[in-house]
Image (cartoon, rainbow, N blue to C red; front, side):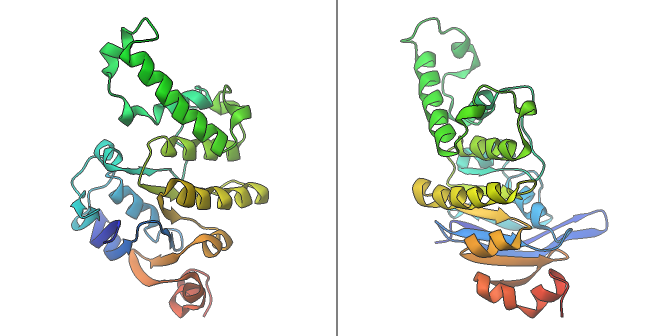
Length: 256
């Protein structure tokens, strides 16, 4: 059974077809990448999966559940988290506070009962301690200790990208959608990111769906790769096949 399945996904904006009959399936525990030139429809696929866009036709299934009609917060609740191509953090909040916001779907006490806790034994206080413990694990995992109490706006871009990744992990997802996670990173940061993505899959058991322009990263980390061009699938296969595929060389690499 596919962990995530996209069937005949199509969406248009005005007269422009952003996606046309896109289908693919991601298996549990895979690192599955989507590549293509600018405007190929990669981020549009992510926006449809995460509920930001509603397709004109087609369906999206997560563990055999049709999630196509769900709103973004409902998609997060069922176990799908994402990062964004452009960083979507609260710049004037600390790293810790941004990561704690990623725990919002795990809160059970609610805002009113949470506001009334005055002692360490209250339900809301225990929940706060538990959530902070989970966030501390993410801080350790991504080696963000030095950034813990710094406002995001004062941190390097590469660190901000890691914080956004950490906030997505704080949701404890089953599937993680990573949209251009290496953008703006230097070579060392990209190499560390590769290890982090593999560890997220291996240590946390999270399935990874990746959109990425860095072909070295994609080919070095992916189990399978899907290539898009003009909103349509032009190839799918293991990295070695995609690297040699004539349609990919022509459309994505400008060769042939």
